[in-house]
Length: 438
Image (tube, rainbow, N blue to C red; front, side, top):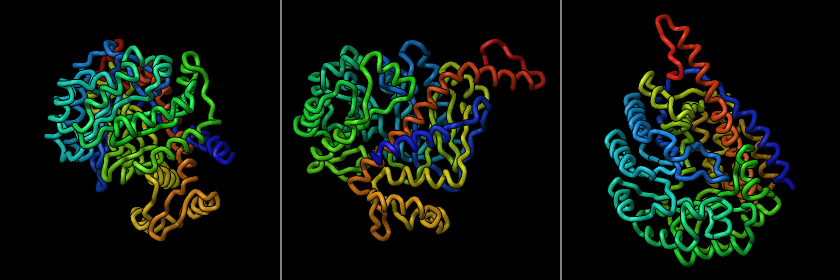
């Protein structure tokens, strides 16, 4: 009951906080004293569009991929010129490996521009073949994250993935081919899908833990925007939160002897494996259409228009068209949210960041979390309890649902963005606006 109440509260809270200033050209900030260590690269192209997915993606063939990657590399050079020097790189999508030669050229540039020590790339099971695996190794990829979702053929058909990415048995064979070729092979899974049974979930657990012995599993609760949920309902049926807690407990119980939790939904066999959601200082910079950045307390979003992305980079050196400046209180809550997502909070580090005031400013929040049995105070650290892990999963689910709703809003505002930027350009003396060039 308490999780449902808190879920509703945070759903409304994150909906308010995902209100951005839209449609204005934004000059990206130069590197600050606390430069982000994480770079996110977004490649939006997919061979097919899954009904449950709320990420910014377009069907392969609807955009000029060569032009897009050229602009992507130009944006990478621009952030290097502004002094950013990230060492951890995460490439997501979409499906980043749909154009392996373009991806390889982009990663080669990344390694020349930045002091890279870790690279993680997303892909789909049907791409796990030679020579792609060798090419990714040669590009310096440490972690390969494979979008599996489920091995259940009925669920794969309902998700529209069976014909595009293979049957459950074919996915197993592809994963076995990739096993041992990277420092970390991760499987992205989803629980609480419509039509997903307990037996299906347990079979997925058995396959990953016992048949494949995969190093890492990111097992997400179903997270969708309002628009995607309506689309998914037509093809898969409606989702109920009533069994989410029992599904999560089934997963934790099955994996706890062989895996450790590195976040509330990431399970790792070994220490030191990369988990894309754990960002030590909570700041990062993103490149590509639809990418987000969090820099110095402000959240920025690049244009969601694939066509205008390249034009913006070439014309004004920035693709950012939306910004949200967090208040001091919102920054505190964001750091609390993302840090405890990684299961524990180191009080001395957070107090240094906030000049000794972090725990004092959030004393009410910590008191409530203790009263709910969600955290324990271990002196220098505050840790989530087992009950707190599920509570934080609910909060993070609502946070990312809020992000997904914003993605929907940005897609709907592509036309408004063009009109707003066109009006601004027309106001510049001597500037000519030509149709849809803006």
